Length: 173
Image (cartoon, rainbow, N blue to C red; front, side):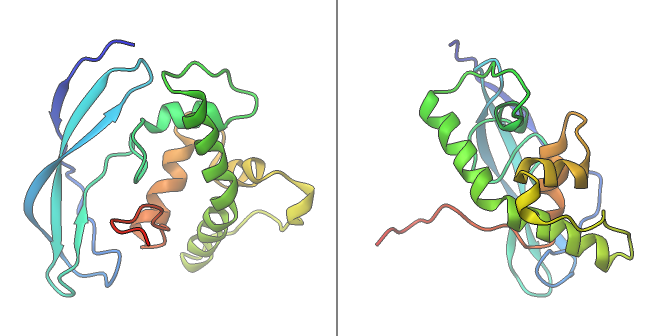
């Protein structure tokens, strides 16, 4: 696996409101965020730090190629999670196993959030199917489609509505 460090500045032209209170976000700086792409190259992104003018909470602007708290690109994770996809990822077997366990554990939360967001925005959701009759992966695909980038289509709305479950902690007891 070759390691090539490349650094890119990430800056969205989209105006996103605070996921906590809906207030306006202002840029307060930036920080580095490293990830590994599907070829195994290490990429460094400089992402903006944003502070809400109302509730003062701090958020980081993540591009669609990243999943919060994951060190590989969403394309790599997506290829591993697809049961019919081919696994061609520069990651250890233990990492692949953790990705699959993470998705299995949180897919019900993700699909519930997506259904709730759709209902809140006045959209129609797919007909209800009993949870036992369909795999978690299939339920998620039914909501966002199976075209490439499906994981980003799950992650972005869940994160931007402040429904992301934080799975990393600074202090362990």
